[in-house]
Image (cartoon, rainbow, N blue to C red):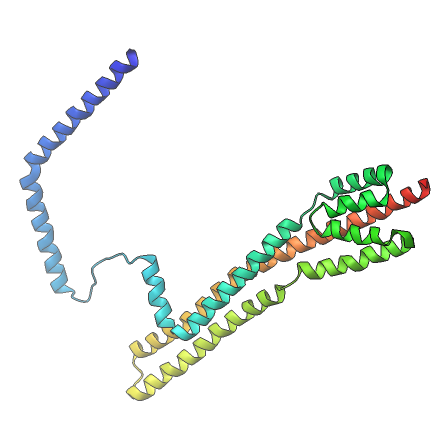
Length: 269
């Protein structure tokens, strides 16, 4: 009940405040109109005194990007955008692949050791087949050659580890290509734009600051776009390389632990 009365009192106060504000606005409306007319007159006088001063207006971000895209030249800017799209597509695919390749190696080694002690090599193979990731694939290849001795198993694990490393690094060269290509296209667009600017100066027959500044601005837009794309792709590239390094360290450590488990298993037989 107390909360109900507090709610009613709050509503009443809000209604009273609204009515008071409306009444105050009515009383001050003529003064406000006069002030607005005075401000409008002052703005008109200032505009007549300085006709080159543009009225402040906010342009949406997508409209600004579209304008810069057109100013930089659709050909070069479209090529840079394509480098960004293809580079991001490959980077996202690699990140997803590496995320699915992550394996809890300690848990996997524990299951393999238990399977070897309880069911032998075939049980260990079954554990590897039911586990996702390159580490389990490497272990499975080692168990396939278990009858040939520990040394052969160790060589197989090392060799197949190199294969898995190559699979993880697959398509990374394309990302590096798009990084270099976007930067090169940006600089190429700048050079072409500067040549066009000098052609405009030659056609005008006079070095006008407006012609020089306009041509240089358009020429440098492609460089800015190429550098932005290269920076974005470089961040993704370094992140992917760091993930690959982390997975390779896990694979090497797990391979050493697997050999130790197999040595213990052979000694128990």
